[in-house]
Image (cartoon, rainbow, N blue to C red; front, side, top):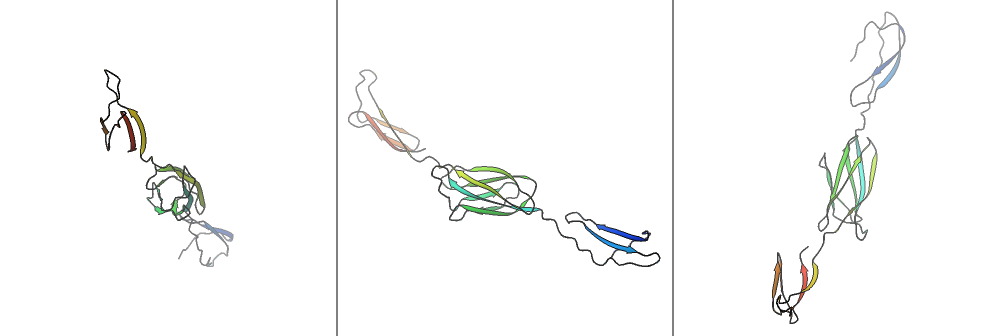
Length: 178
């Protein structure tokens, strides 16, 4: 209940405001020496959240990535892409530059910054993830430094791989880690 006193007689516009709500104005006519009811004044909450949509794809092939994880930076909201690489994240606070990141197994993560408007859906378009390199191959020859003759049977290795030169001193390097 609200009681106003010392309101001048005549037409009046009562405006009610509260943080987080749309202001409402109600017209009343005040008659001197009487009590006037403005009835119920209902305030409508402001929409302070928006929605982000988009698609996650393979940067090399353009194919949609099913099961990729998409996450916001400030609210930590997370979702997973559907079979067409699409995602929707609702409940994003409006007005902030939101850091949106996407990741999937076998791909480098990627991110975009987007600003969400209250009550609206904003599309980030496509977030393309680059495939991580897979095993590599290489070639080479091992020779005797003094005679420059090929050295068969020499072992060559590194972190995660090892191979032996063939009868011509050649290195068949396959399956090297990235």
